[in-house]
Length: 405
Image 1 (cartoon, rainbow, N blue to C red):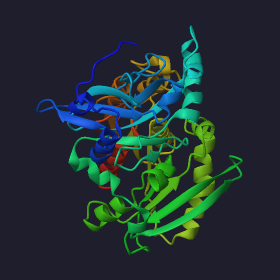
Image 2 (cartoon, rainbow, N blue to C red):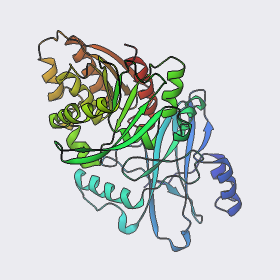
Image 3 (cartoon, one colour):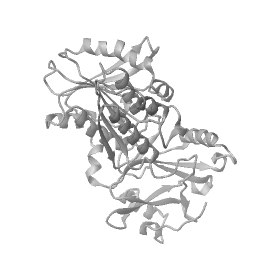
């Protein structure tokens, strides 16, 4: 690894690594930032080796979503400042950057094996994340769970984006019910959160199904934002159904264009919801998902338009079923491309981030293909990457569009 000299003034102080210096860094908060010009900020990530005397740590990795390369292509490592307990990594980011990251120290025995295949590096990285990944303890913004037990820290360079961190369950005003869906068809059980906004609970209300719902119910809750937007008239009163994806194995199986999953929703979950809530027909259903869930949302709308005529897809995994198909047209896209034009157009809201590269391109191809097939598509390229923090804003924005179609 090439050694680099720090740029940020705090990292160049003569007392760097001292107790007084660390106290100053704690007061400032990390990552350290310094404006470079009207559009760019130098961002300096810092990690403290509190057991520096033992010299166990060989390196410290960082994964800054949508900025650092995928670990199977290139590992991004912090630099150690000699004779101190300070490790750092610096990069330049746009002034409106919003994203997640984690730090991951590793001993000599935990560094990647030599001459490992891409799959081997991926497996090594996943195992190391489970044991060593950590949020940044000096970051003043609250960390959050990524859904796999790993806590992520946040970088927010634009103050107008700070509102996404202010949502707490105790501030919600709607009616929240938490239950368990025991599915006979899927032979599994999962948590379901149902949140009803507004006060008139007997009138016609849209039913919004949110895939990977544990993120929006627990990890990055959106209840308060739904309340505020409903009160302001930007969203109609609605029933939001947050569907837990259980774990990675179930998620990869159920959200990958799986008819069994959607049949279970139609034949088990929806009838139960209609029994519990005295909503007035006709019923309007909206499906929203991100990444693999974004693929699944579009799949559900195409196959069961009588239920899911409106769908939201954020950074959809339209490379499915072959990730090597990107950039380009996947089999899923080709199937839609060669299908006859529809007589019942769907209402679709799609977004993808400007830092997602191949994912952005395949989403744009998908949007054009759906439009050519006769569907109504609103597509937006947002400032961000493949990241739950960015999707939180994207989801709220897309709900406003979808519920006001």
